[in-house]
Amino acid sequence: MYSIKETAEKIGIEPNTLRFYEKKKLITPKRSENNYREYTTEDIHRLQLIVLYRKMGFSIEAIQRLLAESGGRGEKLGQFVRQFELLNAHIHALAEIRETLAISLEEMLNDTYEEETGIERMAAASRRMEEREQWDDVWDFDHWAKHYDEDIRVQGEGLPFYQSYDEVLSYVAEQVELPGCIVEIGIGTGNLAREILTRGKAEYYGVDQSINMLVECKKKCPQVQLRKGTFLQLPFGDHFCDTVVTSYAFHHCDETEKRYALQEMKRVLKSRGTVVIADLMFENGKAREEFEEKCSEAEKEELLDEYFGNVDEIEEQFLAMGYTCEKKQIDKLIWVITAKK
Image 1 (cartoon, rainbow, N blue to C red):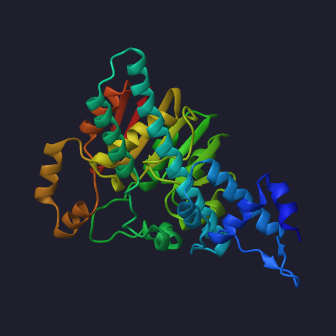
Image 2: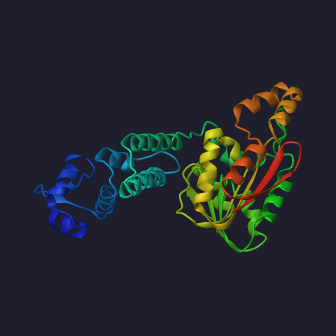
């Protein structure tokens, strides 16, 4: 046990700050028989987090949410997941603000800054931040995680989404240069990661919005480093990896989100990096219309439930960002786009 003075010295703050945190219910130390505050090692770890979050600019209310107990696979895991999500979102928001302010600062130094334009730029940045944080898992992948590998092998009445599954994973793996640093978005239970890693060594990172998918993936691919995240807010720094891959996941982003996702992929890629996207896509709008005219009611229902892209539109966005593109149709529904910086 540590006294308030000892604890303050350990953390590097004033005792009055500890009293303030206690008043705000961020920390609740035990009391001795003499009613003196007594801090445990766990309290000190919690206080170190509080001080860190305060230095990062989090409000007291935000820290309360960060430290709140969360559900999921155990209290401690739930806490870390929630903290990681909020920190990742905060980092992305700060980066957006920094870039926006940097543009305005440069204009001021060049004596070209216009107040109205600067305000519009900040408003646009605010909208982008809000849009990137709105992605929601309406498909409930946490509950699907344990049965995912079994379910994809069963063909139902809807779209024949997984009929070429093994061929798709094999082709995507062929597009990845090894060794290298790889980020897989929507890693799921780790089937693509396992396929790639059987072909050579790599520094492999997997991202998924479902913590239960990450748990299942870790069982299958213990060497893969896993992160909680989405297409819109990848938990990595700029120019982090050589390759970004994703399979059977890009269709969970709507058209606006797809643009943001491609920008995020470019941000984390090194120069001369590669992006590989495998998904249900249509060659163009005409091909989509022709398919819709012939498909069953069950297939139409699935089409409306997802955001399946058009290859020509995605290719156009890649080309506009300076990539070269190759595309391959695996079956009547599944395409693979390989884009290189």
